[in-house]
Amino acid sequence: SRLADSLFDYLAQFLVSFKDLFLAFQDAPSVVNAMLHLFSDIVACQYVQVSKGKLNTFFEVLVELLEVYSGVASERKCVHGISEQEQQELDVGLVQDLLALFKLLSDLFSREFLDFSEGECEVLVHPAEGEISVAEVSIYGLQVLLPLLSLRVDLLEYPDVSKEFFNFLSFLCGSFPEKVCELEHSMFGQVVQALEFALTQLHHGEISKLAMRSLSSLFFHHLRDIRL
Image 1 (spheres, one colour):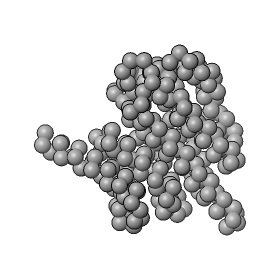
Image 2: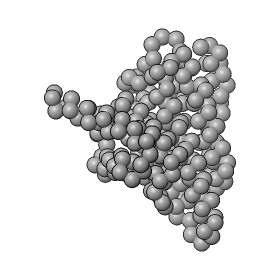
Image 3: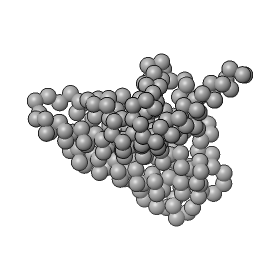
């Protein structure tokens, strides 16, 4: 809508500087988490309403955000000489960050089902030259965030983290199973291990259902490939 586009044009001035702001406050975990939640809220409220021509800005900022966050989280992993309480606080911060990021990535798929922009929803098809697609952003998000789930402890044991992660993974496998299957061997192996963990160790009905949905999407994609 015109109103959504006008509001987005106003927000875009802030979004283009989001990476610099993130880097400026990277040593303040609470501020980092607040910024992630803010961007997640912007995506949840604006993403399905703006016209397709505005979406590339969303995707560019998100890719930059994921890239920067990966470095910040890795540096937190290497912190030495801190107390156990301080380390626990960092772990809690990581959990909160991952909850916001996985929700954000899941919301990227909402436009497939709920599109308020004019014309047909084309956000999930191949992008025009120079543009970024949902598939590219989602796969990059998976590559960046999946290794973080085992930085210190197996964060998949946290029910809230597992729900958000497997919800995102179910959307990704359901919409782009071919992209998941094309992941490099080690990364695809991590996906399979995560699914196995959900089905054999977590014993949580909703999470198991999401994991089975992801596994089914990959299985039927592979079955179609064999038949072709």
